[in-house]
Image (cartoon, rainbow, N blue to C red; front, side, top):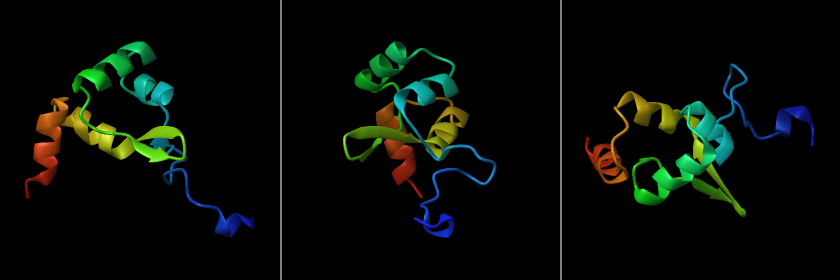
Length: 83
């Protein structure tokens, strides 16, 4: 695939747009096991996107969620629906 036809997978500064669980956990300064426990309990607001078999988190959404004070998933989804 020519370089100009490659899908963009990084933000302009070279930062990945989508992150796997290990990278998402590292970005939140927690371990992967804790990340999965918090996701399963609804304490991490953003839901992953599925690409094939992979679950990936949108970096910008994780950053917005953290900046909002790390609300529960229920509260996060409510905030996203509100205008």
